[in-house]
Amino acid sequence: MARKVSIRATLTVPGDKSISHRALIFSTLCRGTVIIKGLSPAEDCQSTLECLAKLGVKSTKIAPTVENPALAECILESPGLDGLAQPKEVLNAGNSGTTMRLLSGLVAGRPFTTRFDGDASLRMRPMSRVLLPLYEMGAQVHYQSSQDMAPVSDTAPFSITGGNLKGSEFVLKVASAQVQTCILLAGLQADGKTTVTMPAFVRDHTERMFEYIKVPFGRRDNGSIEVTRLVKPLAPYEVTVPGDLSSAAFFIVAAACLPGSDLLLKNVGLNPGRKLVIDVLQRMGAEIIFEDIREAYCEPVADIRVRYKGRLKGVTVSGEEVASGIDEIPILALAGCTCEGTFVVRGAEELRHKESDRLKAMVENIQDMGITVENLEDGFIIDGVPNVPGASLWRTYNDHRMAMTGLIANCLSEEPIQLEETGSIKISYPRFEDQLALLVDNKA
Image (cartoon, rainbow, N blue to C red):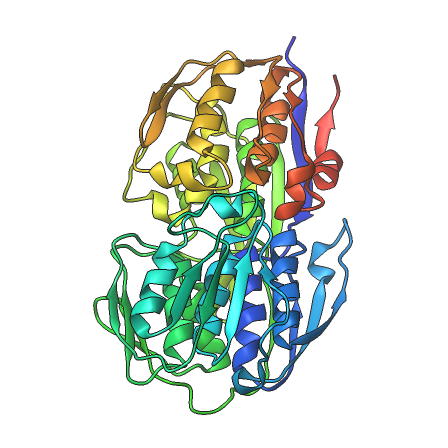
């Protein structure tokens, strides 16, 4: 017998992780006190904070609560770019690719050597997309071997010796907000003009925050962003980070798929480069309503209401779309499991190079739940079913998004699913399990 599970509640999700990283790192462009409210409690953002501390940025934090994650606050005392010091220890980015890639651009302009490393998962993720442009601008990059890893050409650990950068023009082959931001941070410390052009529109948090904190930059008609050397420190700023749409996505999919659900998510960021989960679910027939639409600190924000409207319809997610929500493909796959017809994803091969091979993991787990899925090199095809059997083991590969997706899969299944682990969730959403437990009305 199917379990009677629904979600009927009002929820505030933690601050946006991507914006939190930028709010922390961009504090180095100022000199003085920077206040960040609603900071993401993710371990990834803590990694950024700890790396900044080794560079000479002091900070104090106010912890959030389960009931109100938006209470998180961070106060930083920044010495400015010229006041950053050569770190005596390696900058350990933990599991955070954003930390490693953005800070690489920051220190590339500083006249000292910085060593970078991360956990075993991050050591497997390619870094050449940021390090090659920095090398072309004049930074020295050296890869290093370690006891538990053979030398590899484009992965951590590595060191960057910065300073004396020359601006250049970069046309990226793959749209990446992280690569763009890395290059722009270096460009703010380089002689001449630095321009970044991307092949597709992605999240534009960097441009929006540049506008808010008054970083001088230009935008060409083709969408290219250009900067020149920052001649003096910016004025200190205060910012409130909106709720993370990527975190909200798990609850949005659950509410759209679980009969009787009525969920209101408060103060969620709706950056136009991040809305894949919303756009796809609406195409599938989900009832998603935006309330109190507004702009805060140059970011679009709204309350999102999701009501169960019936079984969703199958759709195709194309390669042109996935850049606006690559990380949400796994949770969207669960909506595909319950849809009428087939759910197809193409052009998502980048998911094979995240914290785990997420395409492989999703195909395995969906098959184990008793659903027919075809594995593609760049995606998958799912045959939706009215009832998800479950009664299976969910492999997470110590990947936080796979673990959170597994917890939602358990809510959708007729029989309980056993998760391999949930400890990895702290990387991005430490109290996800607690909030989910408060939301789910399980009358089995």
